[in-house]
Amino acid sequence: MQAIRELYKIGKGPSSSHTLAPERACLLFVKEFGAFPYYRVRLYGSLSLTGKGHGTDTVIKDTLPGETEVIFCLNWEEEFPNGFYLEALNEQKETVHLWTVFSIGGGSIQIKEFPVSYNDEVYSEKSFAEVMEVLKNEHLSIQEYEYTHEPGLKEYLKHIVHAEIQCVQSGLSKRGYLPGQLKMKRSAHELYAAAIAADGDERKRLLLMAYAYAANEENADGCTVVTAPTLGACGVIASMIYYSYKNLKISEDRLADALAVGGLFGNLVKSNATISGAVGGCQAEVGTAVSMASAAFAFLDGQTIDQIEYAAEIGMEHNLGLTCDPVMGYVMIPCIERNAVGVLRAQDAALLSRAMSMIKRHMISFDMVTDTMNATGKMIPIALKETSEGGLAQEYMGSNKDAA
Image 1 (cartoon, rainbow, N blue to C red):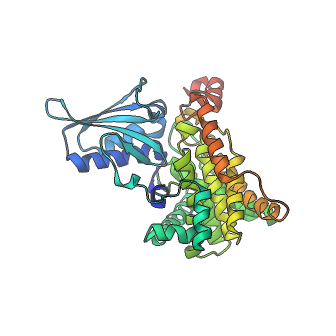
Image 2 (cartoon, one colour):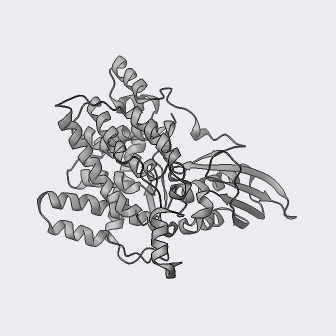
Image 3 (cartoon, one colour):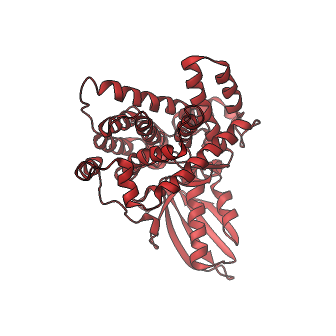
C-alpha cells in the first residue's frame, strides 16, 4: 500500500480526478522539463466526457506556463480508462516531451514514462487480514502501525484535521449560487440554521448533513477541500471531523488518530479495488468515504479493532453498486446530497457494529466486501461511471432539454 499521506490531500475542487490530478501532473511536467512556449493536452475517458463541467481544461491552462491547447478525445487505447496525453512543444510546434498520465482516483496519478515517488509502496501488507496479523503479533493499534511506517504522519494528519475544520466553517458562512449551468443555490447556511432550530436526535443529524453540504459546496465552488478519499466524496469525513470537534469537543490529536484509522481502510480499497468513480462508480468514492468514516466513528466510540473492521465493512457493503452519474458533469447532483446521507450511514454503521458485535460475529470481512466492490465496479456500465451519459444525468437532461 502507498502512504496514507497520498490518500488525504489538500487541493481545490471540484474533482480530484478532473482538477487535482491534472494539476499535479502539469506541475510535475514543468518541474521536470521546464517551461515551453506551447503545450497540447488530449483528454480521454471521463476526463473528456465531463471535463468541461469539472473545469479540467481550465485548471490545465492555468497551470501550464505556455499557450495550451486542450482537446477532448474519444478513442483511448491505453489500459486505464481515465487519462490524458501531455505534450510540450517547441517554437516550431514540434513535440519535444510527452507523458501518458493516468488519473487513478483521489487526485493520485500514474505516469507511463515517469515513476513518481509518492506511488512507492510503504506498507508490505496487502489486506486487512494481513494487517490484523501484524497488529496482533506486535500488540499495536491501527494508528500505531501506521505511525511506525510513516514518521511524521500524525502531525500531517493534524494539519488535515485543521483543513477539514476550515473547509466546513467556510462553507457554512457562504450564500449565493454555485458556478455552472445548474444555477444551484448554496444551502449549507440555511440547513445549519434549521439544525440549530431543531431538538434532540434531529438536530444532531441535521448538523451532520449541514456540515457535509458545507464541504461539498466548497468543493463544487472550486475552493480548498481535502480528498477523503476523493474531492467528490469530501463531505463525509469533513462532516465527521467537524461534528466531532465542534459538537463533541474531541481534540485535534484524537481526531488525527481517527483519520489514521479511517485512512487504513481507504488505503486498502485504493490498493485492492479503486477509489475512482470513472473506474468503479460512486461506490468507489462515497462508498469508500462512508467506510472510512464508519471506522473513524467506531474508533472514537472506543470500539475494538474487530468492531472497527465490522463498521468499515458495513459502510462499504451498503453502498455496493452505487453509480456515478453527475448531472451535466458537475460535482453537485447527486454528489452533495449523497455525501450528506453518507455521513449518517457512517454513524449508523458504527452504532450497528457496536450493538451487533454483542450478539454475534459478523460473517462478511472487510477484505471480502472490498473484493466485491471491485468486481461490482467492473460490471457497472461505462454510462454510469462518471461519464454523465446515463442514469440520473441522462434522465435530467431528457426532462430539461433546455438545460443543454
